[in-house]
Amino acid sequence: MDVYKEGYEPETLEVADIRRILGIGLNQAYKLVNSGEFRVIKIGRKIIIPKESFYKWFNGQEQ
Image 1 (tube, one colour):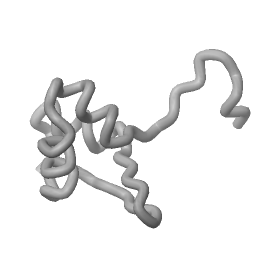
Image 2 (cartoon, rainbow, N blue to C red):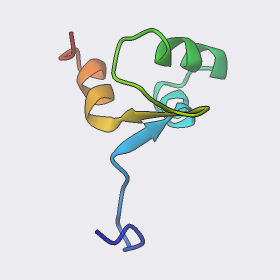
Image 3 (cartoon, helix red, strand yellow):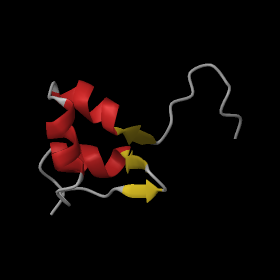
Image 4 (cartoon, one colour):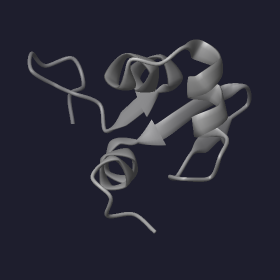
């Protein structure tokens, strides 16, 4: 897959994306990400969130 093609969208979100989507502050975004409400992947200090997991939670479908 060529990730540099126009229109490509990654399958993951970052904390800044969660903050922007929900309109919340940085501290609230980190609390939510660390709450276990949806899947989070930590790579070193970097936190990434699979879009599918976040949007299932957002839409009330994730348990």
